[in-house]
Image (cartoon, rainbow, N blue to C red; front, side):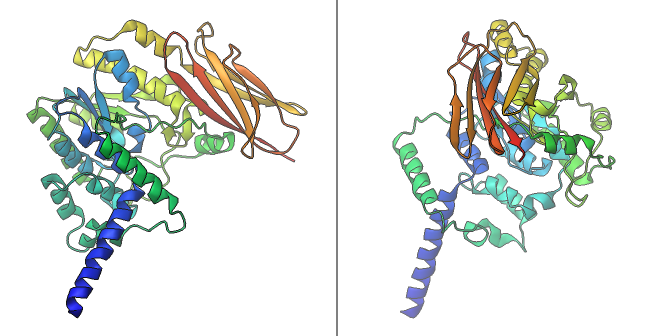
Length: 408
């Protein structure tokens, strides 16, 4: 009788904690959960990679220009080994024309994914499969096998119970509305990196290139072979960064992409050619909404050329009106001015501004043609400048969030 009670207690304990872990959710797992809901064979392009990919590529822009369907899969800190098994999993339900890989998956070593728990975000999504079992056997067996149970590796947010109630309501809503539209896997940030962090990033010295790990190169070959076996065109792109992440070589191996392209016959689309600057980054190694828009638009152009997909020139021209070269914030006695500089000053863009400090809105405007905003800064502190940019020839809205600090 005691054993029955004990076993019942363990089962109930695991179920309750398992449900709570599920309700915690995370953006990477949700990305895969949404992927599993997509209609079979509905995607033309799949983008694979880590945060450099899903922070930079907005499939909605690409799809609009090319009239296709595409989706971003991947996890933070993902390397090519996981990308290979993810692609195998993705191909169970989709038959894309091409797969585009972000090359930073070739730099990261498996230890990084385990150290930060990134691997589990793919394993936790959806049900178990042969691909997830193979990945588990490779990385978790035998010493880390307990990690397949979220209860043993996730911290409960007891101090924030509302998280679970909110997520439970979302799950119930989706269950009762199975046709609920899902996103495209992207995670676009409106924030613009601060001047201090930007200056530190561009003044730092990047480490020298080193030889890539043999395992990563082996899985790169397996990845390309898998694409060829399924009549899929493998494509490669490299998102711009300001600074190579300062990680030890135990987990990060910055490699020379020119040598890699030559050795493996890869045509890598490198976005550093577009002259990104402070305006286009959210932090030293990821672009924001301003950078993502350029990357997504020019990816559509590249896909059109490489795959022979006709593009809509009118829509392409529309998105290019949202290209910005730079911004400027100037401070006078008791006021500041933020100015945005579109690449084409003649484009009919409208700007809606909102200035806040300490979560209090100080100034808010309707859409107007002025590409600058003057706001009072009589008190020291941190000011948030949010802007929505809209070309009324279409429905797209570009959002930016700037920070301005006024010293005592």
